Amino acid sequence: MQAYQFEYSVPSSHTLTVNLPPDAPTGPAQVIVLFPDANNALSQPRPPQLDNIAQYLAWHDLQPASGRSADDVDAQIREELEVWSD
Image (cartoon, rainbow, N blue to C red; front, side, top):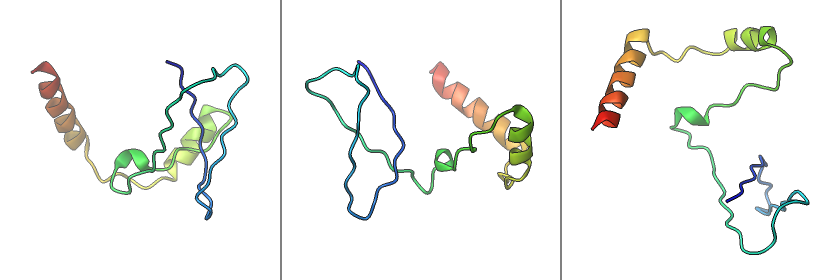
């Protein structure tokens, strides 16, 4: 299975037009539209395209703290590992 990922902003017309690369196969295809979940940490904005790690670190320092301590993160990792080992 081949997959292509595009990021679009849905206009007020609620219509999207997708132009696939020339090497995309023809025939049946599945189209999935994913919207960010406002309650999901993964829906946080992605960092902008930056040229180097120094620019990323400068951007990162401006972001609000998550409010989670290192102990909170470690506890969540332990919980996930327990689920995986079942």
